[in-house]
Image 1 (cartoon, one colour):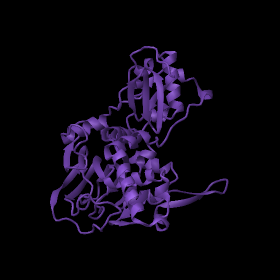
Image 2 (cartoon, rainbow, N blue to C red):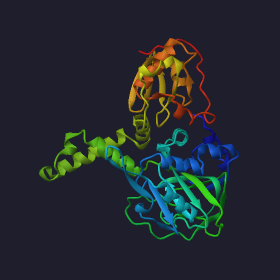
Image 3 (cartoon, rainbow, N blue to C red):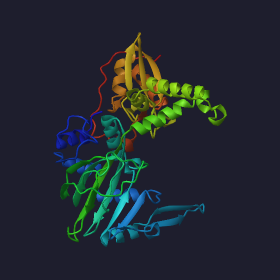
Image 4 (spheres, rainbow, N blue to C red):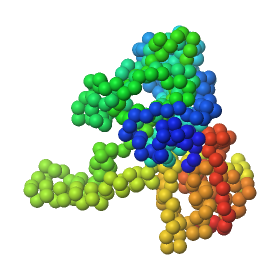
Length: 406
């Protein structure tokens, strides 16, 4: 899946692929300034907040470096059915920003199609789930105290400026739920400076960092987005093995009632066999093909013919397409589908991550697209979703042929 953001990040950080994610600290500048406003602007972020029902902690506000109580920026509205819902108090949010505060919206990719597609592209690139948080600060305001994240971060400064300090880790690859606390900041200063619009930075998991606008002046602002990349670890692999073990009756048997050396050895042997049958590399492959899309737009034929639409793949990771024995097998989104080999060209186009226009396609191409939508691997390209692709992701081309699903 080609995307301007992924290409720009690789060039800015001098990376050739995602191999350095979570490994090294890196900084650079995007050579594509038009990309910044496409991703997000301050007023677009506020409009997203204005048009959604939100609650804390997804929406958070800070003043003088301290988190505010939600009652200071969230209001409860009673609709005409006398149902109470929470939403952002826009007058209060305006006052917070005008008085030198910070507004944070987590998982903005859930609300904004441009961010949704950007996270999907980064997920296809990195092989890990990706989400985006936006941070909007105005004036001479403090930021978050020195802290570390349990995921890798790619931060992009979208507008304005913000000063950062990054330190090395004090505990190798720490986790949110860990064997010991990780509360003592490292003294190893890696970088200190100001991020300006277009700058991008990668901070590995566990590296201490803080960002602030103190000393930046009362007139300016900062808007940056952090793309959080949550990597799988040996712990998540062990958790997977634990779930897989539930299929075996002996693992489900009470330990106390079957306590004896023979049973111990049998369980130890079974654990070894289970781990060897599901090594970490195979676990990662299975995880990526079994992860269902977070969201999927259905096809409702009463709203219009599919032949007049475009479609796009919406899987969290690139579908696995294999050709063997006179058939094409597609594994993705928790599904395994089989097609005739004549469908290969259509499948590779439809599952490329690039939009495919069906208006000039054959009836067979439309039939394959309809099947992929039904299975949840593709979705109609609605007007809103299209905004996340237009000018950011190229369209796929279908080379022809007569694809037939089986």
